[in-house]
Length: 461
Length: 178
Image (cartoon, rainbow over all chains, first blue to last red; front, side):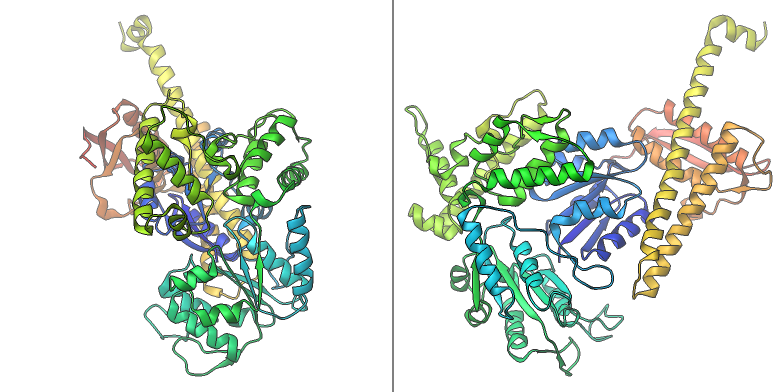
């Protein structure tokens, strides 16, 4: 279940916006001021909807503090603040909405979070198509066509932003359960204290604050599919309970000894190497075996030859269709997109295309405006290696090699092994680089005239 | 020479008129924003209210917020009417000083000026007043906010005048450090 932070100084607006998001499957936190919002950033929300006019400043100040690098910030404006919204887009906001919020506008912005793909009557709304013509995607689609109609438990493995949730929804759509509900829960986004009652439900009075009986995800997904994202973030004791439910097909609510039969297909996903997660005691081995009846590996975008162009054109055509515009990519812009390494995968590509679409005033998009890295940056492309020139300092070369290796490994452990250092040493180095990067960023922010260079402005995580 | 003729001769009358116009424009803008905010909330509430929901309490809460939004917009429209065409609003219509205080708080925040009520214990219960009083208070305090320097703090007191309660700015002090 994705989580949202809503920031608005009007209590009614705050409550209504939060309700709208909750109806779309989000868990919500609210803040009435910038100061309150800053106190509510842990854990980092999946989306932050922020009003421009707040009592202690402009909502766009959250963008300059670097939040936009870590989450999607959507600026919400009332009457007459569209100019401020455009400025917010320039500063990295993902989108803006004007009040009153329409169904369509809100759904367009929230589409990528997939919190609730069911219509209000509970039936499945349908998964967006999986776009791609690379051999890797063809293979994936073939595998899905075989697995989809079965009732097998599936474990989807892939980097962040590769579309694991989309694949889960598509598997549901291909299954005989397609008429049933499809529910998604991000195990990393729900507090460990709440996840048990979210999954299995609770009885009234079973703990402080349980003022009514609550049906958990398993019960609500009865007859359908439950997608458990970031499964390795689930507490280990709950993994035991999950395993028991998968084996027995019965759940008991928190505070009850009665068991309820459930008929749910579980699809889980992780962006970690599951074997590594077992070694690190993040995932129980017995649960891994139970989940990966059928494992699906989703290739990162950089390994999907030709798909960047196909996806970029697809996203642009979707944007054109919804706004009835005829924008196109210039050749140079497409070439630039294809050269980039896409560490954030399809999600990052979508954001870049959307931003370029909004920021381009004419018909042809000439600059895709990749914010964080240059496509030509040696850090941006693993195949390019790193280039060392006479005169480069040893510490600079070391930093570039470390960051380049981290980028190309699934986990920091793997990177540490490759570099021949301990994980702790690698972690300390990365922390040092991060603090240096933040210091540079603060300095640059304090001097608006400064132009950030590729190296100093590069965002490497 | 009368004060008025003296002002006209020295040009201060023109400046005062321009200042009044600016204040009126500011007041119109904040009132329009209030109308729009209330109606926006009502629109969101109706969207939520017409969708089926198993939670009756939540639906009630949402609809009450929508109703409050409509009320807020209606009251702001009355003040807008009084501002644009003084004397044409229904003389029996009661305005809420709490609306004016809300508007001023947000305006003060935009100006970087602190704003506090001398008697916060009233919690919005300032007694009934007329639309004309509310508009006069709004314009007066907007003027006081314009005179204040960012970082200063304005103190508001409730005063009883003909037609009901009103507001006046009493002191301007340096804002306490945050």
